Structure formats: structure tokens, C-alpha cells
Amino acid sequence: MRWVAGVLFLSIAIATAQSLTIRVQVLDGRNGKPMADQHVLVFTGLSADAVKNHAQHTGVTTDKDGVGTLTIYPGETQWLQVFTDGRVPCFPDPNKASFSVSEIMSKGLVTPNDCSTQVQQPSPGHFVIYARPAHFMEKMKQ
Image (cartoon, rainbow, N blue to C red):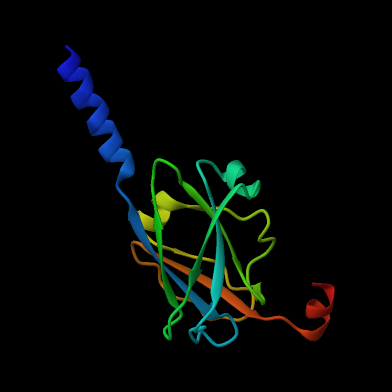
């Protein structure tokens, strides 16, 4: 009986320890071009509400193609909230926007783009964020 309990515990530990990799891409919402060397602050949590508390976070920096790799553990992270340093998101109310990891992994996810008509098609495991440089007055408010 102890052996069965030990195997069950080990199986659960291994299942929760497996990681997922999400490709995070930051595109300029005005023209669709990749934003290289962009730092993305990612808040993580088990629920949409937990993410909004900003208790757990990590960061990703994009390469020349605007792509960074985010590694998460499903036992700890089911939802994401993202902010691009020094940029303004092209979707409304980023403090209230949370994104489902299961949706990102199954179909992909592209944030809304209120900065232009540029749109990228989602693909599984790919999370596209549209942002733009802050205007002078927006920088002054920061």
C-alpha cells in the first residue's frame, strides 16, 4: 500500500513539474513590425483574479523578431497579465485584461489592436501583444 501511495505522489509531482513554453511576440500596433529588445513583465496566477493582484511575476525580453520565450508550470499558472516596459498596450484597460494559458496553448492568442488595423492570426503556443511607444504626455504621467 505504501508503494502505491509513493508512486501516486511521485506521478502527481512529475505531472505538476512539467513546464509549458509560450512564444511571446511584441509587435508595434501601428505598423505590425516586431519590437526587438522589449522587456515584457508577465504576472502569473491560477485564476484571472489572482493575476490581477500581481503577486507572482516573471519577465521576458524579445529578440530581433520581437519574440521571447516564457516558461510556465501549469500547476502554478493558468492565467497571464502582460505589460510592455515603456510602451502603451494597444488594447483597452490592461490592468483588467487577463489571458488564458489553455487558450494560448490550444489556439494561440492575439491581443486586440486599437492602434491600427494590423492583425496577426493566432497559432497554438503563440501569444501576440500589440503595443506602441508612449506619447510625450503619456510619458509625463508615468
